[in-house]
Image 1 (cartoon, helix red, strand yellow):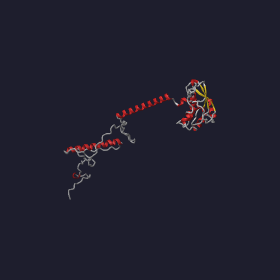
Image 2 (tube, one colour; image 1 turned 60 degrees about the vertical axis):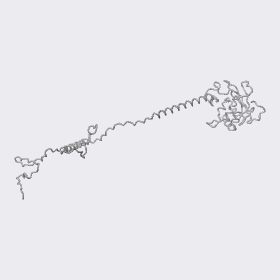
Image 3 (cartoon, rainbow, N blue to C red; image 1 turned 120 degrees about the vertical axis):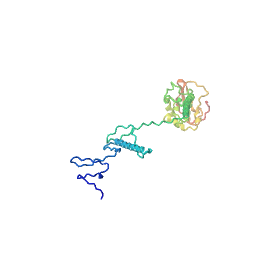
Length: 315
């Protein structure tokens, strides 16, 4: 058998049985000798030990520090071996988080990084030619509105409105005593009653009742309706309108003027003195001259609904 080293009474290993890198600690008087702690080879760095208790932020920084040390050792090994420094397939140390604050205490919710404010989207700028076109169109619209208002004013000024023949109680203005609301001819005052009954308001589909009844004095309106067999002037006008067969002939049944001169301030006008066509005759009217040279119907008498053929004409 091979060489066997003799052991001492304290069972210490012989020189051949000692592990490399192990130092023999000299025995003290009365104590057996024990091997010393293993001796680390020179120039060999100890890897940093991971701390026992770290929060999330400290653990992340510690791991980055370990990665940075691995990278330095790899670089030194490459330079000592004479080779070129090639990238190592290991994760590079991550840069520290910008504007990192102090580490959060354990158990607190994670802190989110501040979000940079975003600028609102800018509205697209309209082309110059489109802006000019819009200005021109707006200008033409304003011109057309002004022209329409001017035409409407001129029409009302030249031809008047339908309300100028109405009584003051209907128009909201003054009375015929202060305003020019009635006709300045006696026969024209009666003719306007026939014309109002013949016409039809396109907005309502009915005859303009105020234009017919407004030619009478207020006390005579009821007399006019009763002589024709109706409850009031409004019902009379609406009913008589349905009997009109020819609007133009009926509206011109009474002439505006006659050949005989008008003398006095009161005129009696009999419908049967004229050729009433296209509708019923309306009886006998008494017309009186009032303020401002106007003529108002101040009386009414019953007459035949259909006049006999006249023997003479007053036209």
